[in-house]
Amino acid sequence: MDIAPIIAALKRQKTAAALIAIEIALSCAIICNVLFLITHRLERSHVPSGVVEDELVYIRTAGIGASGGDDPMVRAREDRAALASIPGVKSATIINQIPFGHSSWNTGVKLAADQQQTSANVGAYYADEHMLDSFGVKLIAGRQFTSDEFLNFDDVLKGKSDPPSSMIITKTLARRLFGDENAIGKNIYLDDTKPTRVIGIVEHLIRPNFGSDLIDADSSMILPVRLSLGYGQFVLRTDPGNRDAVIAAARKKLKEVSPNRIVLDAKTLESARSDYFKQDRVMAGLLVAVVISLLIVTALGIVGLASFWVQRRRRQIGIRRALGATRRQILHYFQTENFLIVTVGIVIGMGAAYAISGWLMHQYELPRLPLYYLPVGAVALWLLGQLSVLAPALRAASVPPATATRTV
Image (cartoon, rainbow, N blue to C red; front, side):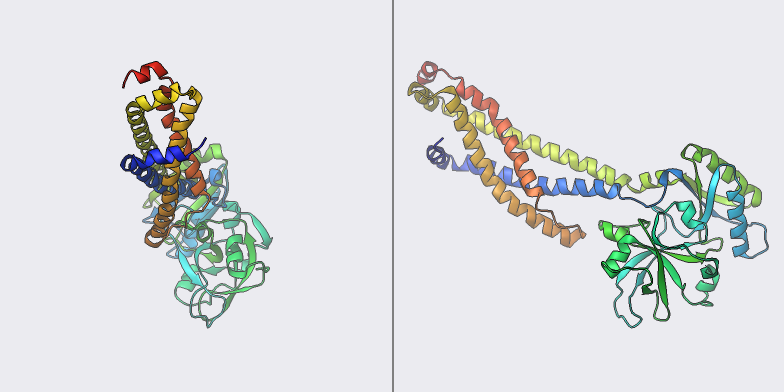
């Protein structure tokens, strides 16, 4: 179809065509960014933790007065052993933090003692000899800690010992620090004194709190440091169907060991993940509602304008039909006209979408909008435009030549 007459007709309807084009441009700019935000939120909520979430429960306590004298290290070992003796518990550990937990222990690491800026900010897990088995993390290279590598947290806290001599890091952190080189045997500095050697690499281990950067989220290390009571929480591994029974038994067991104990929290790790990403799910739902509402408003605008133009052009349509234009040609006329207007709006909207993405990057540290979202938004708006104009166009195509000419 020759589009020259269509463009000439649009020039006589500049204001109305411009309004629809602006509406399409705004819709394109907003929809592209909102779709990206929805996808990003959903990807973030499905980030792998690296642990056997469906087998883990965690317990936080306070007001401890366990047996074993006043030594918190002894009390911690006794409590862990008591929890490990519960029927159905495969393994138990005391750890300073858990994935999707309330607290987050982080530190900067360097590759040289005299390095001025840290190479990465890392989530630090202080673990005993039961942590890897309890969490179910997958060791993909290197080895586990040996008994002589473990330090007591109280000694580390009071500066009575050097930094740990060894560590296990995630695959993501290894790639982030050393690229394609083998990280096993490499040195990492936790302070300006002695290095800590990488002895193992795990597939994944998510840090408790993280932002929009999923690479940063998986940047974790495990240090061989046994915690004293008051600085850690218990994590128990059991069969998925046995978790509620284990939580009840653990509460009872801890009460038996120390009547003065207060259990602050006792939940499954799956519930911790669900709570952690609750805001993300709510936000994604709200953004979906925004997209749907915007599409409806845009569609109504197109339908309204197309219906108005059909009504005003009944005489013109009748003349075209009398001169031999078929119903199909009339239908294609309005569809082509809509396509041209929407295309102008999309072109403007793509530029606006990228500008909005840059602003979001600067203000909220979000990733840059991937370019493939632009054609996705364009196709969605082209389809919306064609569907919205279809009913008015069919009405225009159904006008008989005689009826149309009688409106003169």
